[in-house]
Length: 153
Image (cartoon, rainbow, N blue to C red; front, side, top):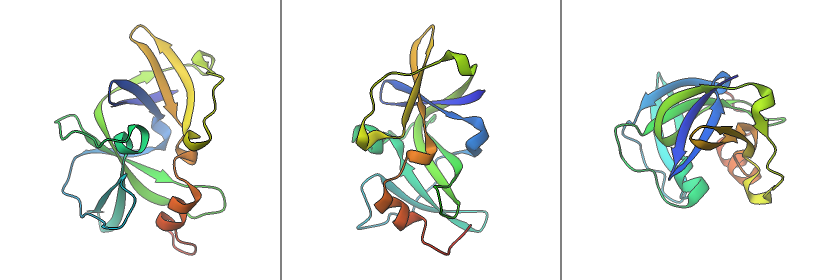
């Protein structure tokens, strides 16, 4: 399985490339006031308004740095019984992929209720990479905000 690797602080994470629509450079975002702090903003992507979540802020509590390798990963987000929506995930050092076999994933044995999006671990020569489980990324409240019933992309 081909995985897109990115960083949140010093830690590496990966997302299955099958979930990625496109990786784009940072663009100017329209800030959404009164939204959760991890909501970086909105932008126009080929005529669609796309919300962008800052993965660094969501996972570690501080925003992504504005570096050349900081990118927006466009994904199609869908949760059970809800419509799908194009969504951007801002992350740092989005520059690499890794090809892994399912047998290379290791169950860490620790399940955090508030971080259900953290999946299995992959071990390589540089250390560990944690899988990001896209379907579990947003809380029910955030899903209601980003995926209103009856609206589809």
